[in-house]
Length: 619
Image (cartoon, rainbow, N blue to C red):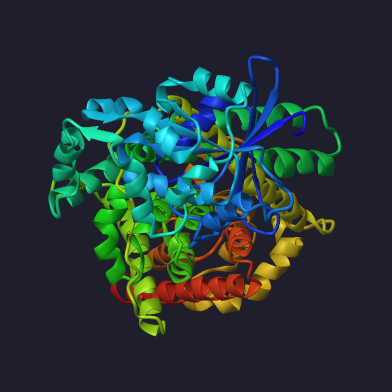
């Protein structure tokens, strides 16, 4: 054994493994990818009371070592010692849900059969006692031939006992005299043998979970509850995030102005202020929305509700060519498509995973909101419909629904052309309802923030600097009368591409703005302001002035052009970070090229239809 004790946590999904990992390691965690694959590797560190350093590896949840998804393959390979970078573990801590031992012990027996040193953690013991279950852990330990520690991970109960067991090296391989039980036979037969006379039920049913499931899994009432819950979540995402976003925007505006005052060279000042500082601000400004959305996702996941939402939507989504497991990735995509696409790793079927990745960019991410706000304010009048609804709000809701309906239609069309017409059954455990572990939620949010900044922030930041160069050079000639961007590489390209976009109503200014918008959709507002030579540092003032300038009343664009651009941003893949993530997740450049072509093609087609219809009715 090395100076550092190397342990790995193994267990079924929803067994409390991640809560145990969080309480052991706190914030001393690191998330990275395994070499050559996109599955996350989560490691942490802590010290035993004696000072012994411990390195903990949190393996993806799996029901069996017979892997069916990339996550499960990693768990299998680490347990079998096939991943060189992980090497052999000193001990495998097998975490099981005490309320569902019949399901969870199957994986423990598979690890025992491999002859690995094992320590079993019996988690959720408080829930088992609440249900009236009496578990003879001493007898169970004897039959398995390995030590067992009882815990309640969400409240840190039993953590000290677990550390003491590791300190005393109570982990070991299963005793050979029990091999007649754990070797041979079907998995359920082995588990039945082990559990014989171990569990006594005083009150077997979980009345709380049964009562809540009558509400949340009802064919009609459950869907209504889900719709109301999602409405509340999205309202909170936008309402709660607004003051934080304004604060971030104000800080970067102040910071850029302050730093810019100390730089006398105009090009260097532009690089630092417009390229570096503005690029960093464009990344961080959407962090509040992403964290608020993930807060709700983590709370719903910790409570046990998300698997039920996936189960509830499975039949509906299957008709559209998706799986119920696609619900969580698509929900995440409303904040940002990047974490949404990353979340498809939990979908075991390659066909369903590929289809989910295909339609995830059609979800209305937060980066579209600045563009929608600008165009709706410019072209949609603000008045009440039926005395209840604001027309601008209804248009925004319609844009969201257009993205969702389009995603379902695309997945349905893919299903029609796919050779494999079979339905892949959605098999998942519906865990008991639990009070969320706030520590795990907090650490999960910290992990999401780090991942977003590392994988997305770096890409957008680099592209912001690159696009600053394209919009700045070459410098305008002496006596130039047009805006500087008109003479830049981006401006030249805009004039070249304008005839291609003329059939959908885009002028050369819009085309120029679409070029830097490839870094991130929200950049189009600032790009349009630059093209139209608007001055000022206050973004609200810029957006308000730009809205008046481009509106039909201001003799700017026609209503048909404004509506066409709105529809364009429903579909167009103006986010290179998303395309880069697709490349990493699929490992296929061909897929990225195909998705880019279909999304741009769909955007052009729908914008063309919108533009022609609008011209017909409103000239």
